[in-house]
Length: 434
Image (cartoon, rainbow, N blue to C red; front, side, top):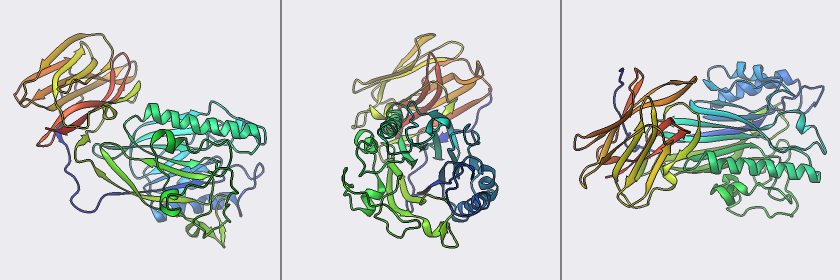
């Protein structure tokens, strides 16, 4: 069995909090003969957009309508953003949603809208929707990034479809991002002032914040049904409202705070005109690790249903009283029963059950995971738990691809996060104070 070095939990940053800066830009990438939006030659504008992306070196960029001039943007961005999604195709084939980033991700999916409308456009001719990626910002620090482009138009059916789109993303966050820090940004085609929109679903249902509302408007959200304060192109008025939005939330392991929000028009002008027909929007964030709960890196394959014990862990420090593992050829399930009575189990019911009852002064501080392939999917084949008393419990069979994890001094393993089905596909550990 090949083993790698133990991965201790990183200490909190001693200097200023780390930062994240993001940009959302609808790049107006429809062919000119279909929609001559924007000023100037589209290929030249796309090359220039890529150069500006590289020049200003944002951490994460979401683009929408990235259809027929995609290659020009990526070529000009060069090596500035080494992690980039592959195009899903030109107009009529792809979603037009792409991401350029300075950080890798461990999971990525494209999801098509369940509802679309052609009442005042051709939204159904292109598989618009949203993307989700679980981005690894630092060891044990993950943020789920969502990019979206909702239905356009102002007819009744358009509004209904757009509201369904935004609700679909909000619902996905509630299912696929339980317990996680999340940043959503893209082209919602919605305004707070418009009637019948679901743009508030993110704040009202998923505990998210809008940095434009909080930092620019002083927390006073525009009132639905009032006249829209639309933006010029370009604009210097930070209080006008566009359809491009940013929403965010932290988690119990990551304190995430927006420090600025702004229209980036001045950075994307050519001969006094914007390079696209949308005002680019940007926000800066700071983040820091929680003082009571942390996470390890994830290990295994991004398959199955997402689970995260963070949302259910008690607020008061507690410890596992029992570790329960099932498995034979692979790990079928993992579980802990806390001294406070909460029980967390993930995976299926197959395999042999092995349990370890912990003493009051005994803590689970180390774990070893091995992965392998089943039906071309990476799964967790082996898990061994090591306690401070020198005792172990394990499940599954070891492979030659293994990783060991160790809680930092004064910390312990108290729960799990990852993906599962009938077996455990992907696994990470939640650390709490002893």
